[in-house]
Length: 182
Image (cartoon, rainbow, N blue to C red):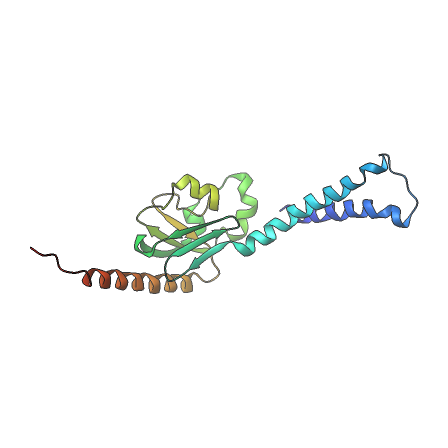
């Protein structure tokens, strides 16, 4: 929600910095302060750019060895042995009460279908997961994760496929163990 004003502010700061190149103008601050306009433009462009990069680096990624939840600065691996069940539901049913200050960025997908991944527990404390991945990734009641993806059915099939592979691999490793001597 800050991207539009951030881009406008950055362009305005760059315009103020380069305006004296084309027109003779004197600003009400000393000329040695002009580089501060570049610093301002850089900082505000960072505010504009970070959400763009973050949205491309974030998401859920099913891999053969584990389900990976990614954010720009953190990746959480969840073993398929920990997953109990997957089921579709609607985001608004899981989170009926949204704080007003979150509503602006939750509203576009509030009535969308999500995939709920129920687990036997979290690999980290739930409050860390909320802090690192966001308040709407862990289930509000119980243990599990909420995945808002464009194709929840394909994600569910992939998770089931990898869960079955992990189950077969664990049963194979149990049967390959040498028999203990009595």
